[in-house]
Image (cartoon, rainbow, N blue to C red):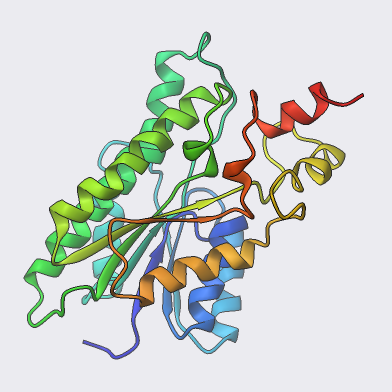
Length: 263
C-alpha cells in the first residue's frame, strides 16, 4: 500500500466538498473527487489539488440512482486498488418542503442521496478493508456530513431533515457494526452558503445567527473532517462545527425566521 492515503469526497467539486478536497490535499492526501453533473468544477478542483502537489481523480455518479453507490466504489477501486483510507459523505440534496406537503417522490430523492448512498458507501469501504492484509484498527474512517438542524429541530425542509436525521442516528450504529475495520463519525456544519431561495441579503443576516455572531468558515469545517480522518481515537461521535448555531433554537429554518422576526 502506498504511504500517501486517498480520500473519497462525495460532492467534492463544489462548496463544502471543494473545501474538503483541498483541505485533505493540504494535509498530504490524494483525492477521489466525486461529482454528479459538475464536470467542469470537478476538473477545476482536480487542478487545484494537483497544484498543491497531490493527485486527484474526478469520478462521476448520480447517487439518486439504484446501484450508484456500488458503481462509485467500483470506480474508486479501479482508480486506486488499495481503496480510499477515508470516505467523506458530503454529497447532499437540499430541496424545500414541509411536513404537511412532503410527498413520496421528494422523500425518496432525499433518502437516496442523503441516507442510502452514504450508508452503502460506508459498507462498501468496510467490506474492502476486510480483504486487505495487515490493516491497523482505526486507520480507515467514514465521515458522514450532517447538519446542525439534526440537533436543533424545526419542521422546514422536512424531507431533507428526516433524511439527515436517519444518517445521524446511523453514525453510532455503523461505528458498532463496522468496527474494528472502519471508524464512523459525523460532522455537523451550520449555514455556510446561500441555499434554495435565499437572497444575498438574507444569507448575510442569517449567517450570523449563532453564538459567535459571525459567519461560519467552510475551511474550518473541512479541516474538522481531516481531523476526524487523522485521529484514530474518534469513533461513533459527531463534531458540531457550527459556531454554536445548534444552541440557538428557532421555530423555523433560519432563512425564514430572520425575515419573520424582522421589525
